[in-house]
Image (cartoon, rainbow, N blue to C red):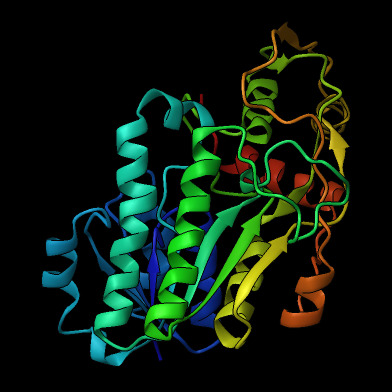
Length: 315
């Protein structure tokens, strides 16, 4: 079965595309390569077990033109394409809305037009905002603390509207903090990437605020598995994808330092606006509805990630 994977050449997308191949699916990778990379999917393309279509999800006419001949053979869509970093979104709000909201609308329009019922949407813990209770369950109030979270919430609202109006069967996976090999480099990289690369360079990374803020970090391979299980499930609604564990940024830094064998001390900076204080997922619904539970604990996931960057990273 052909499965469209928007953002399929990116960090989570390439892991998902690889897993789809291993399960006998044919991923049609839709990606403009803004943050994705051909290198991430080179084996899939070389083995001709998937296809890349270079197009921007925010441009509906181009999407229709390049996908219309394939859509009759598509059994589902995993929609991962998005601007995801808080700082990047804050710097370019208009583009964030084009990609995250209009892009989602365009994907849903394709699904409606060509009768593709199953759409798996990459949502985010950011839709909740500052937690009112822990762990965070799917019924927690949605009050995004930043523009990124708002764009993801708008995307979810579109999903439920298309469910009610057109009979689509969407599922929104609310990812907590995803990490692992192929994390995006650059000025908007996530905290684990920045810690690892800085310490490999023997340079001090930055910790914002007092470092006691917590996050629920989930390994990218586990997230890919959640995506595929969601595709194969018939559950309609929102589902958290995390681990149910929280770790402080200070403790995270210590863990990475010990694994690398680094004695470099971090620099401190003021808290970033829009950062929540604590985060921890309730994943009981994922277990119940998807039969999914994370397999890789944080220590093992960090070890795998560090080994990947030790092998691939060059000054």
